[in-house]
Amino acid sequence: MKKIFILAIGLFVATAASAQDRIKFGIKAGLNYSDIIKGDGNNNFDTEAKPGFNAGVTVEIPLIAGLQFTPEVLYAQKGYKNTYSYGTFKQTTNFIDVPVLFAFRLGSSFNIVAGPQVSFLLSTKNKFENGFGGVEETRVEDDSDRFKKSLVAGVIGFRYDVNDKFDIHARYALDFQKNNENGTDYTPEYKNQVYSVGVGIKF
Image 1 (spheres, helix red, strand yellow):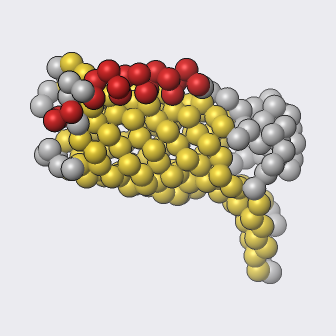
Image 2: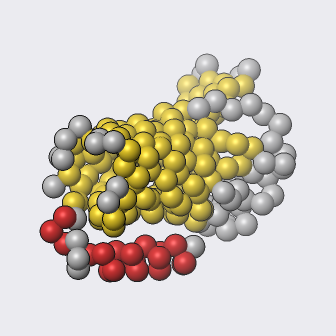
């Protein structure tokens, strides 16, 4: 994980001086549609995807013709939904995502984006609803044996540059690591997977 940040910083420093007048900063926001891929632990239940959102900042740094380095820092909601015969359980996990991406330009406006991502868990919110009302619990897990505080993922998607100030984009992200190594009914063992769409504004 540290190597990813060292690489990102090194690339930024190496290119910032020569490309300073071409670096673009931006903000972005969008919708997440997340679910989980269950592991081999005690995960005998079905899940459904749930909506969330993402928002943050980005930088576009030209490297060579047709290639950009585009790191980001995003607040992102993930999680899943589980419907039982007696109610619905929803888990929302709040993360700071740091995608370390590269954009490969195809044509004048279309870009393929790909790269690793490091996610830092902020909090976990569980909500159970039934026919008699809802019970909601919010907590931050401190036991690292149950919830990892950081996860590494891979990201792939596209970005369409409407003009030099505005873009639309879509992505898929999949964790390479499980959220824990010993799944139970209370804390299932899984990997996050997230589909997202959004818009970006550049300055």
